[in-house]
Length: 116
Image (cartoon, rainbow, N blue to C red; front, side):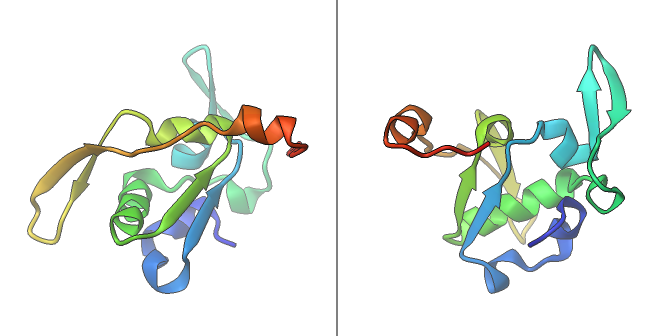
């Protein structure tokens, strides 16, 4: 298990095959804060989980995916990976792309999967 703030330095591809992101708002995962009506609030998570992964962490996750890693994201965390994403390679060249993804929540729910 990794806390969000540990992701940037975790050497993801060497340690993991699959990353699972919980049903958490992107602001909690990225910055460690909840955003409501344009204001930031401390999340109700334990202090060890209140620091976000930041842009470096998101870049580490995208690099992990680029190296063949698998990502499973639940509900609100899915929005981190929607739309155009940018990954810089070792030569500082940027590549913009969209991840192929599929929402399987309806079929899994009808098959009996329940994740509170």
